[in-house]
Image (cartoon, rainbow, N blue to C red; front, top):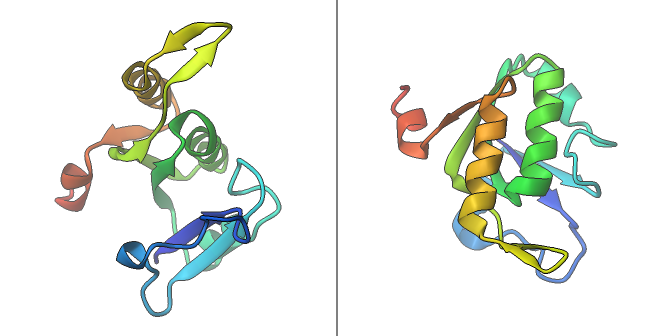
Length: 128
């Protein structure tokens, strides 16, 4: 089962790009919150289709991906984060710049600490 999560469905620039358009029969869930499980049918769809594990990709690693990983782990799903299919950005904390690469490394390290397996997309697709 393939599920697409779309944030801010009616926001400018939120349209799904043709290169990653959902395939026929794919479920697309519109979300309005950082956590894709909050006030959406995502958990019910996964349960209804017998999905025990999820692979998480997307942006931003320090926001939406983080919330999705932790919520899925709370539901006892097997969670895998595909680190090279996630994005983040440079953050500024009271004038201190935190480079995007450091944010990404920090987040993937945190995911591995009791929440998810972290793999490359290639390793995941090859079943490793």
